[in-house]
Length: 542
Image (cartoon, rainbow, N blue to C red; front, side, top):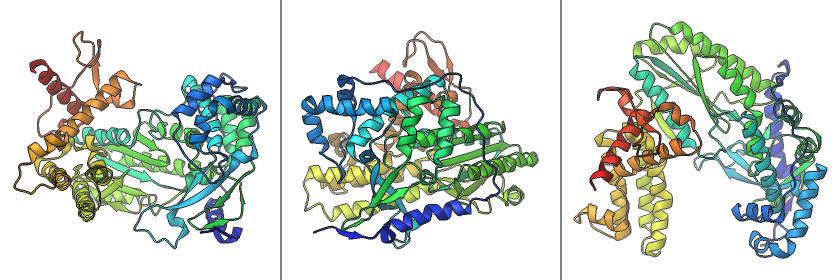
């Protein structure tokens, strides 16, 4: 069917108006935020690449396509020997001259509904995903590699930003926060956790502020700064759906979602906010992209310390306004972990910034409750998995076994494995509920009845039972933390020298004693130590 072209106002108007409406909500009295110079070096230009560098980068990139692509990824990869020198000349000319071709700066935006249960008629419920030409992504990847190396060399990347970083994920972010809350509870402390939500954060970034921040914080200047300026300026987009294409419209702010360089630029843009929060020593924080988590712990008789949290929230709000970022108060959630008699007093102190206090909150896809259990999450997970299993069972006669297995892994196994390192705190009843889901999936795949014992079925499928999948995840995270880049997770371990360590030649894990009633017994440090000990014992006596 031929594409139907609609006017600019019909399809691009809602996206542009959404950004303009958000910016209009920012107080005009907000004073501009001035970055404090902290960079001693300078970065004047990008380094030219060789043909071998280009081939390596191209080989590591995922295949993607866009209707404005000159040639598909497969054709480009297959003919790199003949067109490589020309492509190399274009990329190095862009890096040397500090100029991005206009063809690379046009994006086709595909609106994706954020959640299936949202109203599809409301434009605010869509996330604009930019599809860029593959050649543009290739150039961005080369720049991203060099810019990330610069940030690592300057040691200015935020260690508590888990988005868009190697060896970091939503799981590592949640592990750190959940571990802190468990340890605080074990020490007899109350805790407050606040999840701050930003509205269209990627789309409202101010280009002038970002360029100045590149100059002041990272020492970017010369042709390198010219390149970033060219990359951000004169960007255009059009909206494409299944049948409709809009006219071309201009982008005057923001970084494109779906680009290679955009996420890193967003993380860099948010760097000063981390410094503001760090100035409050009583508070802990964690970022995952534009999701901000703040939490603090205090003794029951120290409610006056909550004023520190209120002051921090006020400064965070001011910084966001001065940087053209909008806090979505309707989606900001607060949970109090304290004796019930203290809830009302804590809520009153936080009422100005956190009017809605909940008994459980959804944090990066995992439901936390005020008892620091995950029962609510297990119930929600169980409903979701069995819903998908019922739907998949209707297709079992129409697809092959291999295709059925892919469906089960995509819709069920992936949910069971998501952040399952947090499940170390689950009781036997909750573990049994999760195991029942896996058993039902295995019986569906093998077309077995309930009378057949499940252990041989799981063994034939090479599926680890739920409890062992959790242990395996803990062991993997422990190994990566101790042998890979030094993640913030390692701060949860007490490391000492040991010549016979099962993990490395010079390090092993230990933890202080605990009782079975302690929350600390569910914490990351204890669970990792127990998992390593069990694994070592099993290997020793195997």
